[in-house]
Length: 216
Ligand SMILES: [Zn+2]
Image (cartoon, rainbow, N blue to C red; front, top):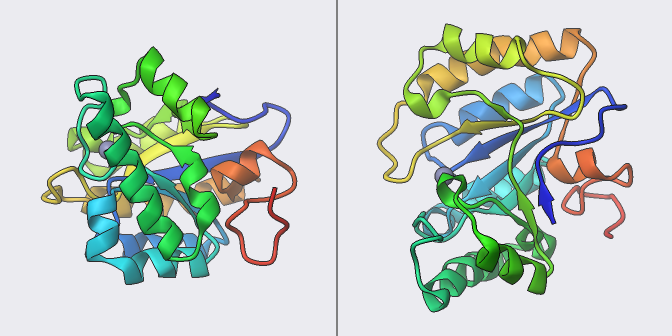
């Protein structure tokens, strides 16, 4: 199943953050999410999960959702089947070992690159391919005002918004993302949007990783 957005009849959006966790930016973003009673979905790289397990545990503890974004961020349409499976499964095991077995069910491909073979593998392993419907553009190195405009001018019910709390080589400056979120989060809240995890957006029963909620 490939997911691009949630239902249009709910005033809710899912904010997603790729390529972390980052020792510099993830905690700053978590603090902002908490300030505005928002939950996010973080598509993490297994390589960084192994480097920063405490950050992943902090995400779980705060009620955020964590999804799989491969181990080392290759373009999976260009890799062989064996390394593709290793990229997914090692990250999934890393997340399992940190106590959230359901997290492996959400997968976002690096560079948004997928093909029929990847879709078939994800279906075979009971995973959901999570894309996005609104690109914040933060990966282009935009300044905060441009990121804010991208999001607030195009947001609608069910939007899945993509941001980045790191990048594939961890050298990106994400201060503009953090600065933009400090404006975007209160604006969305004031407009009446609930800011929920991808799983919550897709199911009224709540996120499988959310503490205290029933697992599906
Ligand atoms: Zn990525």
